[in-house]
Amino acid sequence: MADPLYSLIQMAGLKLMNLMARSGGYRVETHDYGPRTREQLDWYVVDESMATVIFYYGGNWRSGKRQEYRFVADTLCQMGVNVMLPDFPLYPAYRFGEILEGVVAATDHFMQEVAVDAPVILMGHSSGAQKAALLALDHSLLRSPERIRAMIGLSGPYDFFPFTEDDHWDLFAPAENYPRSQPINYVRPEAPPLYLLHGRDDMRVRRGHSKSLVEKQQAVGGTARREVYDGMGHVDAVVSFSRIHRRNSQLIRDIHSFIDKLFEED
Image 1 (tube, rainbow, N blue to C red):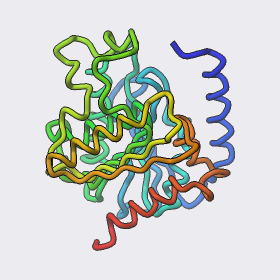
Image 2: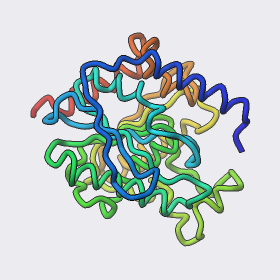
Image 3: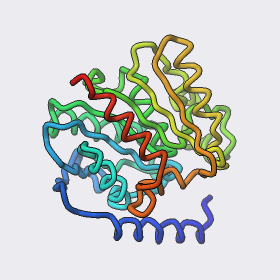
Image 4: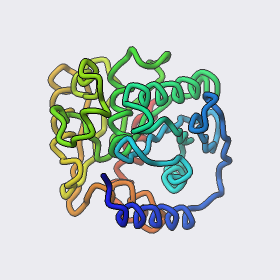
């Protein structure tokens, strides 16, 4: 269980980063992708014809709101892409199978009903990176997997079975579904390029996770790259998107360069 004081500090930090984020240069549309309270998404639109980065926030599969990550959308919009931030079900009200169904429903709705032609890049932080990796690698999940141009993962867990946290045995239950939680089980040569970024000082999700996924994806003939950043911890990866950090962040520069190169020939 998370430390209540740490959670309070983290919430205050997110509010501050959002207060500092700019709000110009794009419009924000809110769409329902289902009837329940958390079945909504926000689309930050610079130009409807441009690619959209879908960002799945972290929170150990149990916390988070899309509005808390406006600062991430703001920074990505400065890179010349649109951004979609979805909400989705959370544990313990829902187990992972239903959480993933919500993520898939939000992504499919966006790609089929909102932005029907433009390419899509999947991105996530922490548990959000695990979701993004599953959607990129398991081609049976989305209705239009060919629309996915790449996946960018920040500090993600991709190879974490057997579980080391007690409640994860329940979160990912029933037992026959445990393999479905591991992105490394879905490596395939035809998957979109994976770009996995990790802090060397990440003690929450060790950088070996991204190393394992990159090596396994490359071993089957797929495309995958990895960057490791000195002096960066688990939360620092997403904090890099704040207005006061992004200008001097190598991680932000690397993401910008990766996105630009994806569309150089378009």
